[in-house]
Length: 250
Image (cartoon, rainbow, N blue to C red; front, side, top):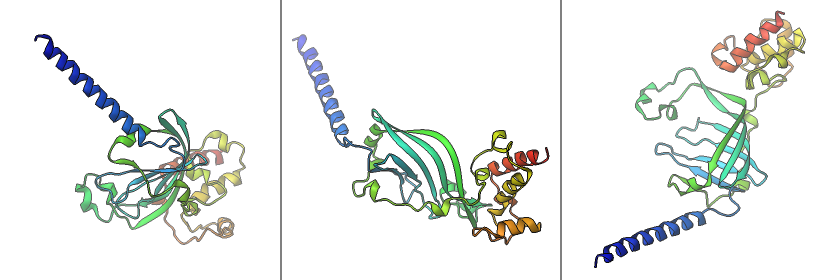
C-alpha cells in the first residue's frame, strides 16, 4: 500500500509531461513551415485602434508599419529578413514617415498611459532616417494572444507608397544620418554651402541670398515661403550644420 501513492504521483507527473508535450506540438503546428515568407504578423496593444504590422515579403524585404490610435501616426521601418532557426533576424536600414512639430494641441491627454499615442499637432513633416539596426522576431511569440498571423491577407498583396515620405535634394544625407569628416573632406566650399542650405530649403526657407534663391527655385520640390524654420530642425540636422560650417571655414 505504501507504494501506491508513489505510483499515483508518477502517473500524475507522466500525464502532465504528456499534456505539456502535446501542447508544445500544437503550438508548433500553428506556425506554417514556410513562415515568415509572404506572411503578415500583427501585434496588438490594449490602447491601439489598429495593430502594428510586420510584413515579410517573399523576396526577403520587410516593412514594419506602426499601428496606433491617431491617423497622423505614420511610421515605417524598412529592412531585409533572414531566418535562423525559430528566430527571424531583420536588418533595418531605413525609418521614415511623418513627425510632429512643436507642442501638442491637446496636452490634456497626458493622463493616458501612452499619451504620445493620443497627442495631436498643428504641423507634421516627412522624415527619413538611415540606420543600421538588427531586430529579432521569435516565431514562438506567435503563441502569445496579442501576436498573431494575419490569416486574411498575404504580404505580397500589400503595397505601401513610400515616395511621399522620402526627402528631396542632392545632399539629403545631411538630414538622414550624422555626417562624418570623410563625407565632407572632398567637397568644395560651394558644395558645402549648398549642402548646408539644402537642409533649410527642405523646409521651404525663403533665402535672402539671390544665388541661393535662384539655385533652389530651379528645384521642383522647393517653394520658399517661410522665414523661420529652426523649430523644424532635427538633432541630426543641427549637428550636421555645425560640422559643415567647420569645413566651410577651413
